[in-house]
Length: 224
Image: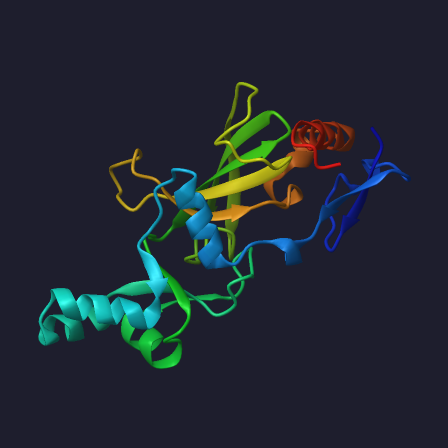
């Protein structure tokens, strides 16, 4: 099969697509909103962080705690608030206390913050029937892909199609809310079009291999 690329961003394998053929549409503007991502991951069986609309967090807490306890919580509970729910790669979100979130972003979507410094996340990447695990870490930012960062390839799983997710490529980000429990992952992000160069995939796959794997996924899920 012959496949061309229609995209709104660049990656290292772009030149390996065909000049003519059906288009593989790879656009960040086609990504889900943050609330839809959390719902999607939950529907797929992943554990997700506590989440919702900021003002509903306060309403729900008011039903479970005294007014004094709610006031204390507002000054200590950290949440990730999404000003732009369609942004990815660390953009469009803030890490702030619940009180500030309630005052400035009451209608925005939030997720509970489970991070720490140095911050890190675990990223699963699927391309065609191949899948890898990475550790992404930042030494000086709460977002694992901002600041002074590093990316470590943890390993590659045997070939297969993971999580019943019908896309030729995707990634899922995980955080670990407990220092000691590596089985208690929270899935926090889903990306249909991960930036492979940011993960140093040019050291793993040749551009032609990436495109061949994408064609394999396109054929499997009848997306051509």
